[in-house]
Length: 234
Image (cartoon, rainbow, N blue to C red):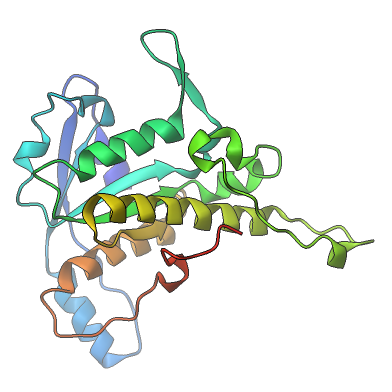
């Protein structure tokens, strides 16, 4: 809620920032508690740049040389949504996000930064995926999920969650491969349902963990092993 209320941006100012901290959670493990309490005393700054202000002559990104991590947010339902540009042409929103992602990732100020791709609106993707194929976006033209219908004969089974999960996985891999092709580094991914507070909290905590990997002599389990660059599109 702090992030939503602090957003307060218009196309004229294009940038906003806020400080926040992570609350201490009630956990039984004493060691985890000590780490949690340590992090709860730290303050973080979240700087949000409106995508409309990220044109070719954007100067905002040059001011961000000291950021620790870049959070790039996309909507999972944008693959089937379009907008009209100033020339009257219909532009696919996911393709627009892809182009913006490429320009931000390759910007000299951010080229060597860690990136966390936050993929939101998973709840809406589950509602949309059965009626609206992923191939509406030209970038996803090779998507052909394999669904086993034989085991469901005579019984109604809602396939939307499985379809949505496969679609999310496919889109995440597409962005990971794109990021790797541009930087030869790993893109981190987080799945978020924006209206669920725990989902947003986990995403921000994941970003915090990524920032501290270089500073702590701790081996973390890779939470994204299922999002391998070699994952099958099916």
